[in-house]
Structures are given as structure tokens and as C-alpha cells.
Length: 227
Ligand code: SF4
Image (cartoon, rainbow, N blue to C red; front, side, top):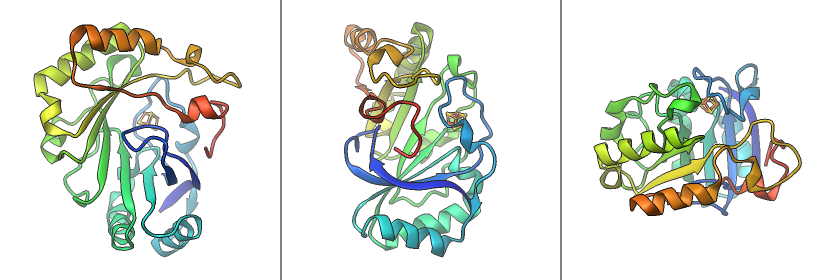
């Protein structure tokens, strides 16, 4: 598999926020979201066998801990990723998979907690979500909308209501998009939508969703990699 980095940090998004976690970041992505903060994953990466990956995860975190597979888009390497995920689960890790929602999810092992994006229009990839993926979700999974404008919020709101997402996943997350050129200053001014405004929209509409902030961008310099 082509790997960009493996590192230990705190889980920054999702309902697992704040927990220590080992991140396995895979190379390659077939989308080009305007606010993407992982463009360094688009090319390159180090070739690693599954056994080397499992050993490196084990060096950073004993079995029983939290591991997230992310990217890029990890499911572009699906044929090698599925056996790797099975091995990590057999070792006793709690496994999260971050995916764009564009790749099919049907083959992901049921023990994996899937965190699935639905891309909003301002990302430039608003038509990318694969609707059949809704049938592959369970209540352990999470659906995430990264919101960069009021138009994105309205798209997300309509999508949640039209598909009754609160019945299909354990968590629906609305998260403000972050400026990809953010440097140094760790505050909400780096969000493309003010979190207070987003909170007020959610409350005004009575939505059954969770406001998510990328806490690693408030703890460390938002331009840092490997945190
Ligand atoms: S899917 Fe993720 S990695 Fe790919 S361009 Fe969008 S934000 Fe970046």
C-alpha cells in the first residue's frame, strides 16, 4: 500500500473526538475539494506491506486502542485495505475509516466505524456522494458535512431531512470548513463559517445533528502535519 504517514495524536473530529488515536494516512485522492487540507497526499507515498503497517501501529499503540485509516481517499487502495482492516480488528483495535462518500462502502468490514463525508456544493465536489452508500451504513457510522457557506448549510439540511439521516447513522455532523491557508493563529476566525453562526442555524431549524469542530486545529498550529 502507498502510505503518506503513520502517527499518534488525538482524534480531532467525530464522536471519538479527544481520544488518543493512531492515524494511518494513505496516498491518493480522486476528488479535489477546494478547502482540502491534505493536498500533500495526492502524490507519492511510501510503499509498505500490511505486516509492516500492523507492526508500526503496534509500536505506537497497543491493541485495544483507537486507529483511524484516512487519506487522501483510503478506499482507492481497497483491495489491500480490506485485509489490513480485518487484521487490525482481529488484533483488538477499534477502527475508524474516514472516506469521502464517493467510493463504494459495501465491502468495508462491519466492525469498522465508518465516518463518511457528503460533499457540499462549495467544495466543488457536491455531486460526488454515492447514494447507494446510505444502504451500507449502520448506527455505529457517522455522516459528516463540511460547511463553507450558508448555501452549503442549506444543502446539508435538505439532504439530512430528505434521507432521514438520523435513522441511518449514529451521528450526523455539521463541521465548519477551515481555511486551508490558516497558519499559526488557533482560533475560530480560521473557519469559513463562524461556528457560532452555524450553531444558531442548527438550533433555529431544530436539526438532529451534532456541531463538530476540528479540535486539532485549535490545539496545534492549523498548518502542522502529523498532529
Ligand atoms: S476527499 Fe478529502 S483528501 Fe480528497 S480532496 Fe477532498 S478533502 Fe482532500
